[in-house]
Structure formats: C-alpha cells, structure tokens
Length: 521
Ligand code: XMP
Image (cartoon, rainbow, N blue to C red; front, side, top):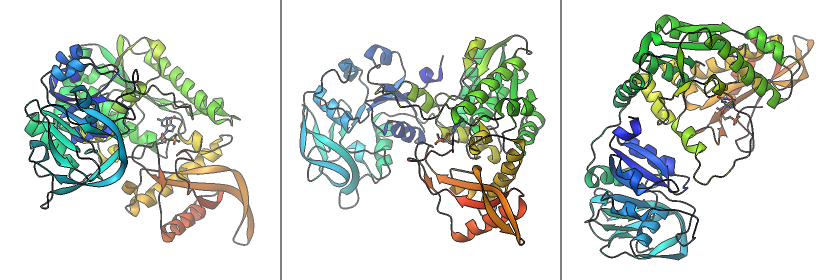
C-alpha cells in the first residue's frame, strides 16, 4: 500500500492558491502527513477509502459564483471530518452550507487587525492579551451571511465574518491566511485544528519517514534489482541511501562523469558512495565523449539536448550490463508531482530544457521507484541527515544536470573547463571560509565569452572575464542577488586573478530572477 494511503493524514483540497504548498508544509512541520488534491479530481468516494483526520480547503483565484470554473463534490461535507476553509475555502464552505458570499466593499490585501468575539478551540492561544491579532489577508470577496448553526469567532473592521465556526459539525472558516508567516501565530491556529479539533497524533518525523519508506521500497521491489542514476546532489544521494538500506546489493548506482562537474566532485562521489557507504557503484568516465560531442556547439538549447541525450545513451549502455534489472529509482519530489498536475492547467512557456539525472530513460521499460515523491526539499534534507549522509552532501548548493557547460556561454573547450573549475572552487571555498555559504541558496563562477585587456606586472594581458553569481531564494523559482560587502568582493577578485592564469577581470552579477535566470544558459 502506498505511503499516502496507510497514514492518518490531512487532505488539502487545492483551489489554485499560490499558498497551497505552504499549507501542506506547515501541516507537516507540525508533525502530520498532508496531501494535496485538486478540487477537480477529489471525490467523496475516493476520500471515503482513506485514513483522513481532517480536510483543509485552500484559497484560490476563483469566485464562488463562477459556474463551471470549479468542482466540489458536496458530499465531502458529509464525511463527518473536521473541515477548515481558508480564504476562498472559507467562502466556498460557507456557500455550500447555505451562507452567502459577495464582493467586499473594502478589498483587504496585507495585514489586518482582527478582534476576538467568542471562544473557540481553533483560536486557543491565538489572540494577544487585548484579544487582538494581526493576520494577512488577500481577498476581494467575503462571506456576507453565515450558514445556519455557525457563530462568529473573530471580526475585522471591514469583514465581520473573518473567523466563523460550527463547532458541533467541526466546520471552521477563516478569511485570512494562517499558513503565511505574516499572520502572527498562524501556526498555532493550524496546530489547534490538527490536534484539538481533528485529534490527530504526530506521525511525520524524519525517523517515521525513513522507516516507512524503507518498508515500502522492500514491498515494491521484492528481490528484484534496481538501478539509480547518481549525480552527487541531495535528491539522488538520499534515494540511493534509502534504497541501499532497503535492498542492499540489489541496488546498483551509475555515476556518469561528463567532465562538466565541479572540481573534485567525481572523487568525492566515489569516495562517499562506493568506499564509505559501500553502495554498488559503476563509475563511468565519459569526459572525452561529452567534450567531443560538444565541440563548437554554442547554442544553449543544443548544449542541453546533447548532454541530456548522451547521458541517457551512456546510462543505458551501462544499465544493460546489469542482469535482471526491473526498476529504475528516481528522485522525483512532491512539487514535481504537484506541478505536473497543475490545478489551473496553465502551460508555462518553456524557458530552458531542464535535464537532471532522473526521469529520462523511459524507453528502458523499467518500473519506477520514486521514494521521495511525497516529500518537499527541506524534508528530503532532514531525511538525508536521518540516513547519516554527511552535512556536506545534504546542504550543498544545487547544481544543474548540464553542469559547467551552461556556465560558459559560447564554445566549450578543455582549457575553459579547467579555468572555470578553479575559479568556482576558489569562490565556493571563500564563501565557506567566511561562513556565507549557508546563507546563500546557490553560488557559482562562470566564464563569459569575451576577452578583455588587462595589465599585470607591466605587461598587457588579454584574458577571460569571470562572472560570479550568488543568489538567495526559497525554491529557485525567483531569486535575489546576494549583497556582499566590498571587502569580500575585493578579496575574491584578487584571489581569482592572482591564482588563475586565464582570467584578468572579475564581475559580479547583480540581477534578480526574474528578469534573469539563475544559470546563464
Ligand atoms: P534557472 O537557470 O532556470 O535555474 O533559473 C533554476 C534552478 O535550476 C537549476 N537548473 C537545473 N537543474 N537540470 C537541473 O537539475 C537542469 O538542466 C537545470 N538547469 C537549471 C539551476 O542551477 C537553479 O538551481
């Protein structure tokens, strides 16, 4: 049985809010497993079969009176489970139960002060000693008439029905967003819902996850063999370690060195996985093959495609050598799963053809093992620590599948790779030395495809420009450049120029994403 069925959980019905994933994370941070389902897919029948502690209805850009825009199986209200409606969820819950929703005279965006009107299990320890709290609102509609049997728990100046409840049926509605950090003590409200109202017991720690996932892998795979593409990044490392704990020598990892890795990366991966963790590891040195295929290719998309395709070819070549393989392990994460089933169904335009180790060789006809598919990235990191992977691996900055190839616009040569590896190494080491590495989401050095004139020791030089990029981000979707002080920039610029032959100018990238992307290509 899959993880999502045998755990007592909170179901979050998603109506397209930008905060739905945040609700899921908050619930999990409180120690309860949560699962997101689209309002278009959820049904009373499906929920009936599952072990549900309670339901949260998310916010969303919809309007309760817009027909055909959303589905909601009304029978869900008859499941007898506690329900918490948030923002649009509050409106739809009220509407379904016979209340009314209308356009607000005063739209509320941002912080609002709410005032307590009556006691509720939901708001225990939520208000300050003046019976007030600051909450974060983002709505244009509001509930104008409560359903029967509901009472007011709290109001703002502009909306009387900001928190309402029918405690007997365990139905609760809040117009604001308790899941965002701007709402003071929002987590307490969610905690009250989970533990006092749904009466759930904690079931979601890294240790619980480890035990359950290992058991599930054993159940799924049995005595069959599994292969796993290892990149040295967090996700594939955690997948490999989980599988190794579950099936030992029936796991074989394949690590392809494409010559575009960070300095010493291949040595570290072999050292960690083969020597220390004793995982079956096939190390493939394909540096020459990649560099040959990439010679004189300058188009970013072509580079990405060549690398992605060659990776599959090599992976398949080596996978064939292992007999009786039935499964391919991948580090698919929960956001990948949710995004591929986007609630709004909107098509985002393709900016870059992403490539990573997992997810590619479909034609190999192997069944998939995706043990991380219900986890968020921070949960994967915690699980990695629980699995005794080193902090170095767990908290490493993300690194793209096409590697250094997309950090040197223009043609790729051995000489440029060598120079770039050294510059990147110096930069990252300097960040570590100054305790900045963990404050930064991702940092790297790149080589720009122009040479400029410089003067060193009275001689004219004509060398590459090294670009440094360091960003802060939550998830890589948006990013800000990191604001280094002048001294740090001076030190690293000097170190790079003094130590690396081939670079005579260092620049720092001060664009955010958008409009730029994190990588250069
Ligand atoms: P961009 O450049 O799209 O990068 O702003 C966002 C994040 O994704 C990483 N990235 C990749 N990761 N395969 C990957 O596994 C790829 O092809 C790829 N391209 C970009 C990038 O490093 C950043 O963390």
